[in-house]
Image 1 (cartoon, helix red, strand yellow):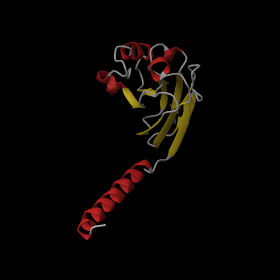
Image 2 (cartoon, rainbow, N blue to C red):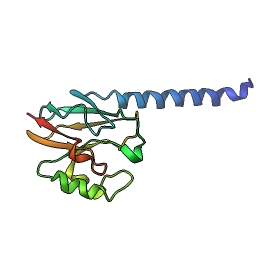
Image 3 (cartoon, one colour):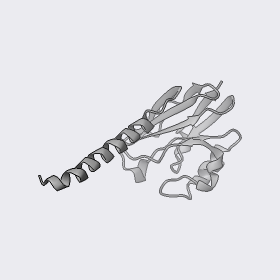
Image 4 (cartoon, one colour):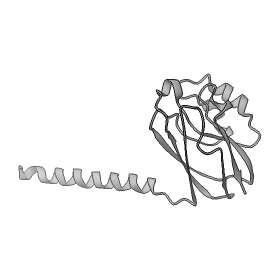
Length: 154
């Protein structure tokens, strides 16, 4: 190796180490509780209810465990604020292919994963809101009838 390239190589290696450690620290963000579940090709969540406490930092890990293509059977998790109609929100979401998430309604949402294809996983971190029961749904067209659940905040 040409010695004149050593400073550039050192800088590149150090930059890569910094970027890698920065990404790792974001993934390792301190949370109070982790909730994990998945969605399947039978349009079901593996967990239809979970409980957290007000103010907790919640890590939600969601996986599409199905095998069908995303365009036919994509899944997500959208946790809605209190008082937001599931049917109205999901009917609006249908208009926003390919992600089926109405950005104009983002203020109606506590947290949302990306729409996932087979074997994809997404993680979101959010702070649990005030005590109450909150709906979560899959906004892929037609899925909210079966893919729904309740987050209870104590």
